[in-house]
Length: 361
Image (cartoon, rainbow, N blue to C red):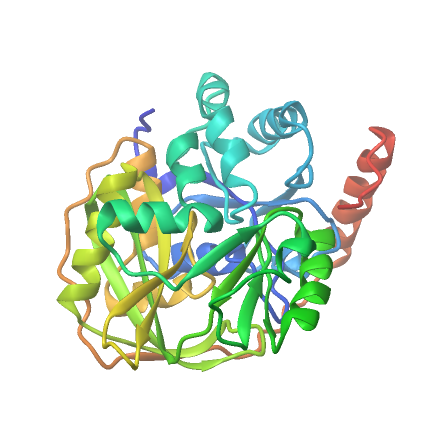
């Protein structure tokens, strides 16, 4: 899909929760605003009208209500068509991993409705699920921590060959440390109840975490890599401070993975640089921009703008990597609202109830 001037397009962005464990949506919007070339509009697409990012009136031009990530695809398609009619969105950028499979399946229907996307195939999305990483790493000759996929808590007790403590990880999110089989059993049930099946047991390795973000035109054809080393994290392991690095080994691993997946669109690859072996271990692949993406334009990498241009038929040249040693630190950000914004939220809630939506996950 092409646009006469992608830099004036209207972009719909999801993932607006900007709380302690922020979604990437507001950061993606900030990344677009940080690029003086972008002169378009940004529409926040929120499944909850009271999410704090929906009130970021200095970043978003409008807000539209969309279904919860797990809702039927037909509901998502209808809501996005309405956002096209009411707000003129030219491009939808999902910023939650849980939404990407749905948007990937709807890509053709969205294109017919006049809404562009920049997404990997549904098959590629599935191959980067946490429980499929060991096979992907085997095919690409990339190291990853020892992992076992579990569908029943009873599978934990007969496991042998594990050194405790270990990580217990949810299917979509969540990671907790278990000291023994009893604690692993409890965490299994807790994570399964919240995130579904399977649940993963993963060995705990000591090291430093690295993140590799970018946008792929297709496969390993990226506009640029931005690699950072975590310097400070939250209790949930999210980076609140990091510093840019230059490591050709990390980029080479990233290219192998992206090429194997025939990836298209934004990505974030998470690695652990293992103290014991000195090797990079792949931990996770996120099918969207990271929540620190607003940092990228400040090191000469307008990745969010790249995604808009590529999705709408523009030509984006490849750029050299940013220099090492540039850091970011996340700080609190306060946004003020208005009566107009409150009225819009009230109208969205009324519309939600009128269509029978209960607003529950």
